[in-house]
Amino acid sequence: MLNVVLFGPPGAGKGTQSANIIAKYKLVHLSTGDMLRAERASGSELGARVQHIMDTGQLVSDEIVIELIRVRLVGNPGVMGFIFDGFPRTVAQARALDTLLKEQGTGIAAMVSLVVPEDELVMRLIKRGIETGRTDDNEETIRKRITVYTNETLPVADYYSAQAKLSAIPGVGTVENIFAQISSVLDGVA
Ligand code: AMP
Image (cartoon, rainbow, N blue to C red; front, side, top):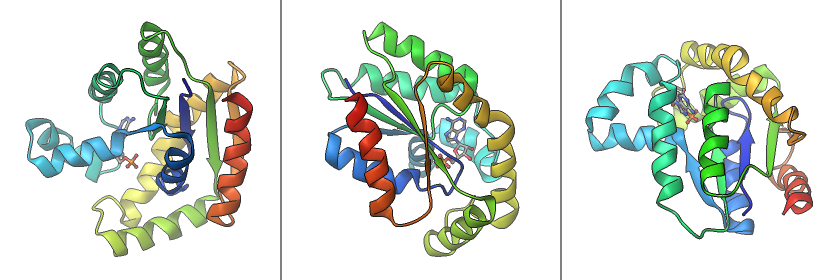
């Protein structure tokens, strides 16, 4: 199996590059942000519980997102692999993911980290907020999400680096050029 963590701050281009990776490598896309937005849109009790947390740029609890991932790992037997987008965001989530994958007899092959300067991230997210109406893409929440990323999520890169699985790629330039660099990393582990 090819299990890949696509890592990077909000606005790094994880969603865009996930689409390319899925098409080329036939992986199942697991985005906890998309799952949580779907919960909200469906009007579920879970959706209502996470609404305020998401709209203020904080992290939803590890228990909630780990359970969302667990259900999908168990529910997709026999696939070519998974791409994890926006997960894990804490070291506790990374440890839980390792345990869940081990139970399925597999593990993470690579973490691809997209590196983008903060000013560029803010610009991209403000633009996305205007275009899509995403409620957490306003300047105050964007700054908060970047701070949360720096404090709580960046240590996840060290976790995979210690396992020699981290590849950092500049997340600026054309979508095609960034994807070519991601492909060369994945071709090396596939
Ligand atoms: P995203 O679409 O990945 O930027 O996620 C949007 C929001 O969903 C984040 O700002 C968090 O509030 C929440 N979220 C998504 N994934 C996670 C995660 N792995 N851990 C905690 N909160 C998450």
